[in-house]
Image (cartoon, rainbow, N blue to C red; front, side, top):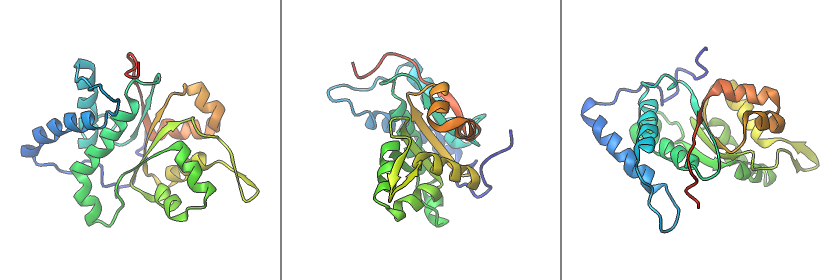
Length: 212
């Protein structure tokens, strides 16, 4: 499939000195643990988690088969999807953040789908513009928000709008969701579901819930 990202994407195949690779990979473990917010519980780096972090590392490095796409983390509640996505975003910024700032581009942004709706409800144009233009946008809990909202008497679909505009501008999106493919189609329509499939590679996160 044709690359959906622009040649100006600062997160595609940037040269990382080989001497720093092992440090970045070790740091990813610490980033992952720091992003795990369950009280009185530590996140184990078991074999499944290690494999997932290895994939995130190669994706951020630009050597993964799908480094030219975002990631759609899906699966049951509590399996660590948000923690993985936060870790991916933090690693992107750690590895490439200096280039983002140098080139005058915005840093990666992580926001819940519900917060996107809130930005549109209060007409926060500064944040809405950032949602459209930031080079890497991570949307948490897709499908948890209202699919339609009223703003000044007009019905709008904020999340669909952001995804559609980022598709047109070829900007990276990462997503977490508890929804199935069928539920995404029902909530957002086949058009947006197809856009997500083209923009992201799907990654099923399985296992027992860490919330129990």
